[in-house]
Image (cartoon, helix red, strand yellow):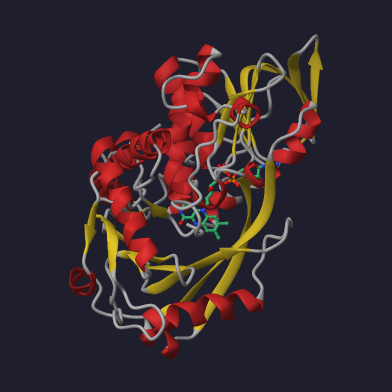
Length: 415
Ligand SMILES: Cc1cc2nc3c(=O)[nH]c(=O)nc-3n(C[C@H](O)[C@H](O)[C@H](O)COP(=O)(O)OP(=O)(O)OC[C@H]3O[C@@H](n4cnc5c(N)ncnc54)[C@H](O)[C@@H]3O)c2cc1C
């Protein structure tokens, strides 16, 4: 595959862009692969990419019922951070954040990683103490964060009202190298790199059943026929419960719609990401100028992938207290995705009751930021059959053993 470069852009401009080749191939499925990954979201594609790059396993198919990144990967608000409280979480999220730093170069695809800084506002005394604790934990984990006072918050975010009527800003947990990236580009970049390694990205191919024999998966039934495999990796986020049922096991997971919205584009006014967990809203400004706004999950389990009016009202009403300028903006679009939430708000990267079948799910409202770290850890699990250090604590058995990784504070708001 030809490399993207400034030279390539100049060359193509000179010949009216007629020489670009397709970013990834659209092959017919083979009868058998070494590994099948179900789900071409960021996590599935990253799993396949690191299987090839780190473990030399390239006879891989990534099977997607819709289109690349059409699930949560293309629907999220793209916040990237690693300021989690518990050690296993900080390790995998920081690995992911650090891989984002060089992702554009690694994939030769501009994922527009923008480490513009991220603040989680403390608007109650409880939050002040909670975030100070997280800052201390992060210092021990080698994750660079700091607790900053309200004046510094105002300096970083001039449009904020720190005196707030109900919830004044008392400080914030600041991660200077947190930020955002272009979500579609992450999926497209991985897909291109996988295709370049000879892997098959099979879009519009739905897995309808999983076949097994003597406790091992033999392959999957799909809308394009049976496809055999030696190992199976299930990476389908909000559909994890359904697909696990096809494999004959249950998951401690709930699927819920999570919504987001964007305003009309305006001139640059906020160059950090701000999360306000007390009032339950978070916001960043896209390169196009839109204010990208996210709220909470629906209060009931469902599989809808669209927005609802009451969410716009609740989320914007909450944020206007802290950002009064929002009241003058028109909201342009809203949408939803189906997120997969575990009881301890931490993901599952695990072996399953089937010998050669592995599952990656439970990233809930915050898995975009984890994509490269999760793919790295999942590839190791699939290749070796045992979890490496990054995935070791995230097994399914933790729910049976009561070894929870409680991130209900760090992951309590949608992001
Ligand atoms: C509104 C919203 C805002 C968010 N904001 C953030 C944020 O700011 N920061 C952050 O870190 N995270 C955020 N998230 C969460 C993040 O988007 C997800 O955790 C992450 O994208 C999950 O990626 P994935 O690859 O596991 O899943 P997905 O991208 O959902 O991919 C799973 C794929 O599996 C496919 N699939 C399902 N069933 C089958 C089948 N039977 N056969 C074949 N294919 C199948 C689906 O079509 C889908 O494409 C947000 C989510 C939403 C919805």
